[in-house]
Length: 246
Image 1 (cartoon, one colour):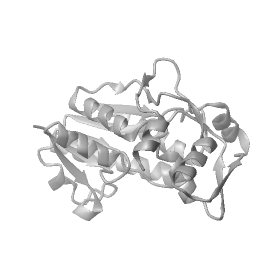
Image 2: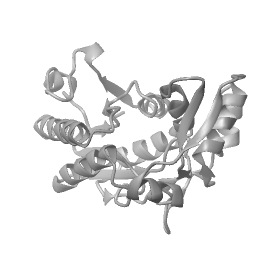
Image 3: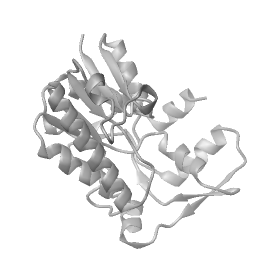
Image 4: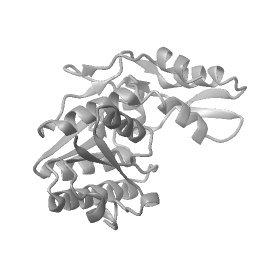
């Protein structure tokens, strides 16, 4: 049995990481403020990481502001790397996003900053995955008004459970630096997925496409966030995921 810390262990992917670890007989340690741990400042980390074999970072901040995203992801990565090193953890694994080099928005700048910090260290791995199946519903819920505006975006969504399985496999193995990208089985238009989610939930909300201005918008609409050659392809389709969520 191994002891593995999970930063962001209560989030969309983090909950699955915790479940997968337990199913394989390992001991997950959820790093959260609720448990007295602040992954940004390091408060409570030394005690939480005692005896930890690996750290999986799936922490997140919801923002489009470049400065906020870069500061958050860089601070958290440095704090976790330093604390993990002092605790004797042999591996640090971070989750990132496919296509962030080609879409220049603030959040993706933060993920690029995170990758630079993580990969500059030793005993580290980074997994880039495409957007999760849950992403379409998140976009709809965050929008306001009777008509939900959804960005024009080509996506190849992946099940959060399969992302978690890949992260656990990485964490239990040897550091690899950049791991092969992980993508879903099928490309889609995000607007179409949002409409299907709304219909499946029995909602009367309307979904309308929102063209994102500038180079970033054109890149997202044309498929810059789709995985390239050599991607590791997941199994669960969006239809299967949607049917299973009720």
